[in-house]
Length: 175
Image (cartoon, rainbow, N blue to C red; front, side, top):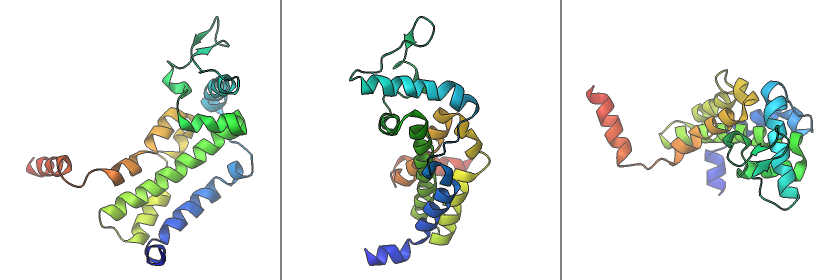
């Protein structure tokens, strides 16, 4: 364990930088603007309200004469992260989800680069850049896109080492 900590210490830099970036969320101030505030927060509220009432979030009674809630993928009715809205309230739960997904993106980028042989310091740089870059961070106002994109690093990090990946690499070299 001690050897692992000595070798992977830059991962803690990634976590620290993302937490500093999200300090407002940690202190309870939730950044909510645009689509997050007007569209996704009400959906998460409807989902959290259903779970608190002890029922599945199948129907949204607040949309016109009602609308399917679980069938709307943007409502994230069955995402484990929406349970944060049940525990902490809708706005704060959405903020914590944003912060956790940012940490996931950073740690995933770090682990993906380490898997492919990058030095810890280089991997840490990627782990800091990915969640805070201009291509990803501004998309936080659209949680379905942001939350999905944050899984890219972890997906690459756990991709099987052999088989199909080698075929893809060989095909890309032959063209």
